[in-house]
Length: 75
Image (cartoon, rainbow, N blue to C red; front, side):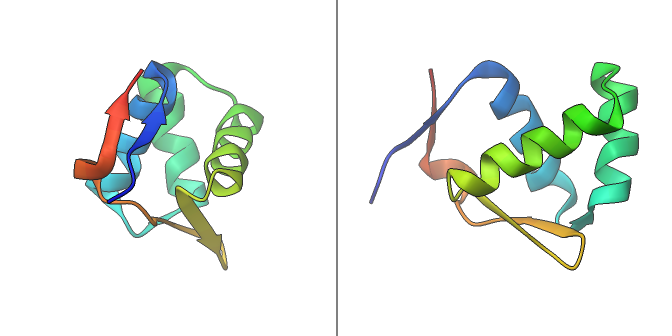
């Protein structure tokens, strides 16, 4: 089992994905605007970041996690 690490903000964002997946990127933008007061571009940047780390995937504007919550360790 691999141990994945993420920072506090990434972790809070990941929690939203875990709690709501599969979630559309549009819905994710709405939730993050409410939770973090983020702009749309910030949410899309975070989606891209987590996809690059192979934590999540975004296909047809639907975001899902690739890593179970139990395998993630907070920094």
